[in-house]
Image (cartoon, rainbow, N blue to C red; front, top):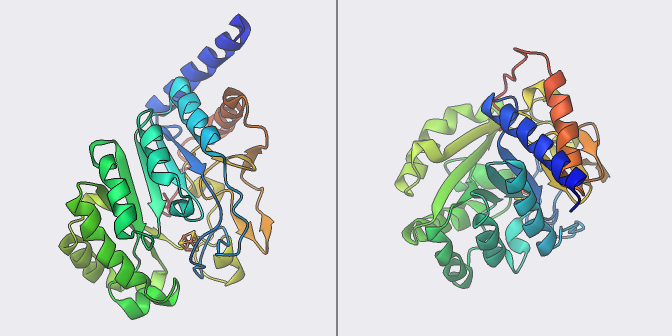
Length: 287
Ligand code: SF4
């Protein structure tokens, strides 16, 4: 690397660290590992489905991005999709990435066979959290917008993960009319060994399949925390940016399609974050 390139990276790293310290941007960098999924939920942001194109980032690209993120001063990683666990190499890939930065991986929690659970067990000693979707406290209502048997698989898998010492978080995506079921859902996640601090609740966001299906809340850019996000298509303002509606990628929150070298995309992200009006915080609790 030339001295000039090293200097540019150092300048970006200083800017990023200052922005994270000031809470202008999140310290977490998100990575879309793939876009396909074994489910096809009615509110899916990315129109993921079993027959959706995988559009996966290569494993070595993900490893390199993790290292570049650390070198620039990001403090954590998020891995999402699609369903990341459709990637056969995911447990080992997560382990490699967690050696670089602490990470959370988002999953629908339906693919945890005994074999996969055993392959995940070594992650118990690493800085990895599994964030599993669970929306409602009973099978009929939970499975309505997700898939048949979804509730049973998730509720069965969580205690096995907890037993193996893995950190499990539960992510609940709610329509406004379902908020009344939250207390029962909290009783359920506690009974599964997941504490309140590891329960994340957010509204259905009106993007992707939710937009086509006329559901959820409209999120303005100011409602979305600046969380630098990389997909195979480029860099985005937030993990809620690279959504797909009607088979077309949304580009309203695209920062740049060029993500190599990473520091240039991060510079552009920081330029945009610094232009954000002070005090214009989001109100929808979308994280
Ligand atoms: S919401 Fe998640 S689990 Fe459901 S189809 Fe989309 S990626 Fe898959």
